Amino acid sequence: MPGAELIIQNKNGQLQQPMIEGDIVWETTRSGAASSLTFTVVKDDTLNFHEGNPVSFRFNGSNVFYGYVFKKSRSDNRLIKVTAYDQLRYFKNKDTISYTNKTYAEVLKMLAADYGLKVGTVADTKYKIPQRIEEGTLFDMLGNASDLTIINTGKVYVLYDDFGKLCLKPYESLLLPLYIDEDTAQGYSYTSSIDSDVYNRIKLAWDNDETGVREVHVMNNTASQSKWGTLQYYEKLDNALNTADLQTKAKALMNYYNVIHRELTMQKVFGDVRARAGTSVCVGMGLGDINIKNYMCIEKAKHTFSNGLYTMDLYLSGIRGEFSA
Image 1 (cartoon, rainbow, N blue to C red):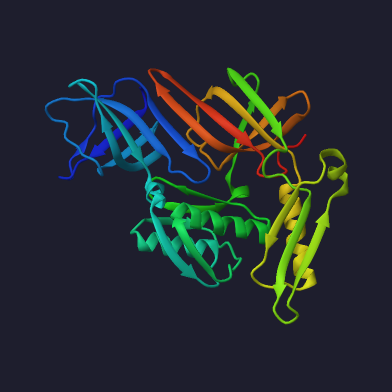
Image 2: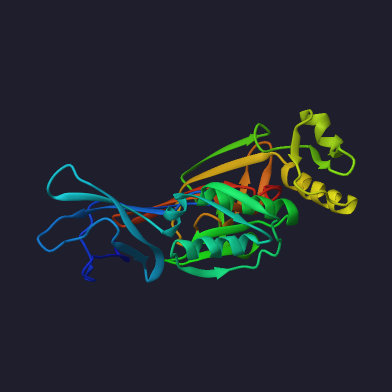
């Protein structure tokens, strides 16, 4: 495809630009997964690469993807289908860690250092997480740190690999000057739901060691309860908070969870390499129960570079509250 530059570096340091058969597909996900690049190369006498070799992809001079070959498959001797992932693939590793009074950003830097991963721009997430003992994947550990930061500050941060360097940036810094409506996509699908991660009663509890009593703080939103019934969020706190801190935490949780969860998928939009998961685009759509003219976060993006045609499928949602008329 014109403008596409895909390079594989083998173990000898040789840079190879193979002939590509068919599409190049780049996929990104906002959380819990690495971005991937899939493509099919034509085998010849000079092409030589193996699992673990670096892969870079640029389009019209812009950096798009840098990662490593993880899978090769073939159904004949001429074509090899390749799947490469960026550094976030290594966050599927399982481990156990403990830490005290570290921010989300500090936990990310600690794990990156443990696994020899390269780090780029990492924002100061400020909130110090109390003592934690974690066991699971590194994605699980960072997801917990992200959730605790959101709950206690209301701020959302986006973790992604920027052409070979791990970055952590505030959601609001990733707004793109792109406008999408019915005319810029070949199709769309839309769903709204209160079935998952929607709450209008917040219940926080902790055990008072001095009195031996479990103390409870409850916050209700009666307006949405009258429409949806009572949907309760419950959390047992490790440490007691004073009344003001409890109210602040409960309010942050209510603001985050007390909204209808809406999802919008835009199909075959004209491609733009800036539109990766975690960034936001402005959407203008009439969807029956709601009219949107606002920024929407890209939860997943699938970019397809085909012969002379570059399109993307965008899976959009509100990070809580942005999906509004």
